[in-house]
Each structure stands twice: as C-alpha cells, then as structure tokens.
Length: 267
Image 1 (cartoon, rainbow, N blue to C red):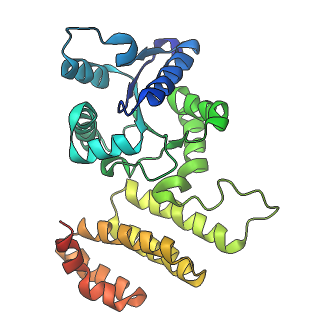
Image 2 (image 1 turned 90 degrees about the horizontal axis):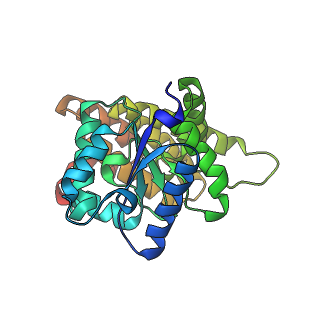
C-alpha cells in the first residue's frame, strides 16, 4: 500500500451553503495535515478554468474520492443536475465499470436520508455528528490508507449502516437484545448480497428483517424495507421475478400481487 504522502485524495460535494463549504474546507485541511495531497475546488480551481474538465481530471486521477452526501447532493445527483450531478454521473459510470473498486468513499453528512441512488450499494462513513468528528476521521483515515485487512475489519464494523439499518450505533445499554443482534446479522447479509448484485437474496433477507420489525410494531421500518424490496425486485430477470413473488407472497400476499403495478406506477 502506498504511503499517505503519495496518495491523491479528491472531494466531491454539493455547495449547499456556506457552513457546508466551511466543513468541507475543514475536512480537506485536516487531510492535508495528515500528509495527503488533497484536490478540491476550494483550493485548486481558479477563475477562468473549465470546471467540468477539472472535475473529470481529479476524479479519474485521484487515488481516493470522498463523496460528501447531503440532501442537496442527493437531489442533484439523482436528477443529474448542476456540478454535483455531473460528478455523480462520472462516478456512477466508473463504479459500473469496476464494481469492486475501493476508490470511492461515501461520507454521510446529514442525519436524514441523503444517500443518492447510485451510492446505496456502497458502505459509508457516518460523519453527521460534529461531536464525533475526530473519531470518525480515524475511520476515514483507515478507509483511505489502511491495509486491505484493516479496511475489511472496518467494513465489517460499519456495514450495518447500509439501508439505514443502524440498530445499535448509539446504543448505551449493557447487552444488545438477541432480536436486534439477529437484525444486525441479517443487515450484513443484505449488504453482501447487494455487493454481489444478488437481488433475489437481498429480497429474502430484507423480508426476514421486515418480519421482525412487524413483530416489534415498527411499521415505519418495515415500510422502508418493503420499498427496498420493490427496488431489488425491479432489478431481477423475468424468471427471478417469479421466484421473488413466491417469496414475497409468504410475507405479504397483496404486495406480491400488486408489486409490478406499484413499480410501473413509480417509474
């Protein structure tokens, strides 16, 4: 693995407001203090330069690209609007070309949903709480420059954040209940299936989590999981959809009956 001084790190973000730009600037400067060569428009883009060419060059030639996810970034990325939308299109194409790349590191900046569609399969680092900046920055350093084994350990530690399945990120009790441990393990299986684009398995495991949520009277959580099930179903082949409907029917017969109509209605 290259040393940090030989790594170029670029930052992709949406210029939501002045406070957000200051936070991005702080992150960039903190990385510079660690010895990284940081490429970000705040420091490196000058008047008269082609902003699209700048974005293309830094994304393609950087060793790591940090993607700062906010609600503003999500909106622009999903709609492919403005500079953030252009960057999102570039990054999405690169991820599609190499689905196992570790070049792109999403950073969750808002506590609300801010994950663009094209980044949902990737593991993110949660830096939404400024009080935990130093702690989460250590996780970021490991993701950027740690060894593969260190990185894999980090992934196992934070994988459960995918799909907002964060059962005990802020849990302060003595013992995590067994039912929540089961949800945590299932959420890891969801992530593994997503990374392998095995959407039939994604559906199976999300249904198991949704069933637990229903038993806990957490209908809102179950509803969000059902939305994810529909998204996974839309990625299946016609043959796999037949299998998926049978699985879904055991959980919710009406959902299985109307799932095609629901998906077509939302297109």
